[in-house]
Length: 102
Length: 169
Image (tube, rainbow over all chains, first blue to last red):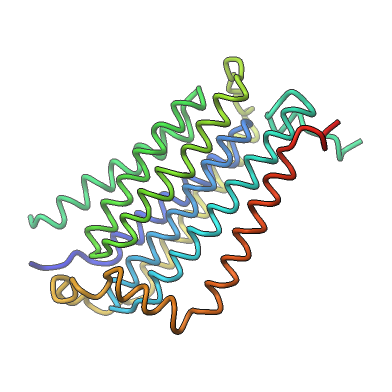
């Protein structure tokens, strides 16, 4: 069975990364921005796995493991920040949180 | 048509569609549910790349732990209907140009580099098992994994401190 070219996986990861950037730019809800960041992290993971599999090297899998650990820590901290923000300001829309501006 | 290509196309279209729905859907709970579909399709892509351990880890960590946290926070905050403020004409054009520029840069990088022809995938089905990944993690990557443990511990304490009620008032 002939393997498909690695460029397919890389182009798919690029499209997913661009979608994640789109979400970070156009959305106001902090939780949706958070999910868009997860999409970007996952697209990078996909390139890691693709290179690791095509080169026969295990380092890519290890990096994906560490990225997942950092994403888990980031989600715990980020959601705690969102909770604290909601208790303080009664909103999670990022354009209404402008305390540092004044 | 070989089966690998068909699998890749189905999973890739599913991943792109669910990512777009996550970003563009009006209510955040729909975003969260379609993000779960996105994680499962990525796990399928990892399986097509012979990485069983990472695929299972993807489902357990992302679709299990992280999405439970996100949905929990969504339900806890009990938001009213989220309105989607549409971008004005000027900034919409700016966003479009920026996105297209980023995507073209990524695409040019992919096309310009000449990758070596992939070998047969089926010959290394036993390369990325949990055993070999564990061996690598606890021999040559021992120090990074200890640091990761400290990072997770700090994250737990930080989340506890920040989400406590008393500190806010």
